[in-house]
Image (cartoon, rainbow, N blue to C red; front, side, top):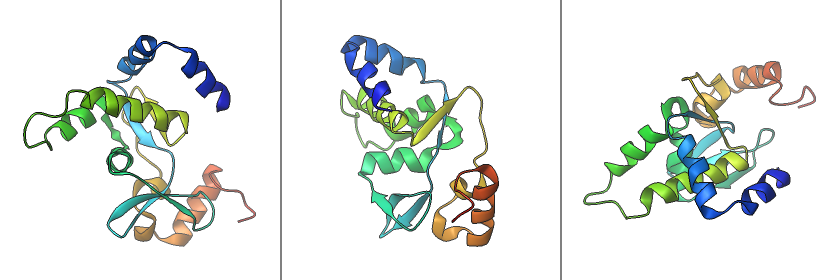
Length: 146
């Protein structure tokens, strides 16, 4: 992952922006389990009960990353939430955030819509723990030792 980040940092801001434009029409999916804690979206570790709190924009992206929406559809959806005109740099800021989440392997992109596995599809607190654990083991998402 560090290699990816270093390579990205070597690119000019214009080249980075062009790269981000390429994935506007791609579908995006979360690759981490999530839950709702105190009315906020949090990312769960694959194994154990540890979680990471998120800022509001990251919450929106992670909660929306269901494999059924394109990045552009997310941008359009978020734009409608602004009572007036969205901030001037809104789209580029959202694309930069998605770029960071891709580098951290919290999201993945695809050319077609996809269905998330059971353990990524809904908040952890709304899952049947035995069913989720079995599915994660079968997919290799967690090891058999846990």
